[in-house]
Image: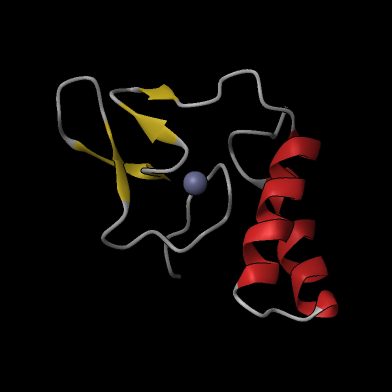
Length: 81
Ligand SMILES: [Zn+2]
């Protein structure tokens, strides 16, 4: 299975975030996670969905595809309770 950021759901490739010791995170991307901490620690899952929706819209994703992508966000590790 392809790795994806456990915060925003984007594919995790060359865009890994960094841990406090400078190593690369296998869990989160560099837009969500830096130096061992979330960049926006107070963000809600609703806000994350909105940001992703805008980002995907800019990439030209049609609404049904965006809907599927956004659906998975609450199941990611960061948001699962
Ligand atoms: Zn991310």
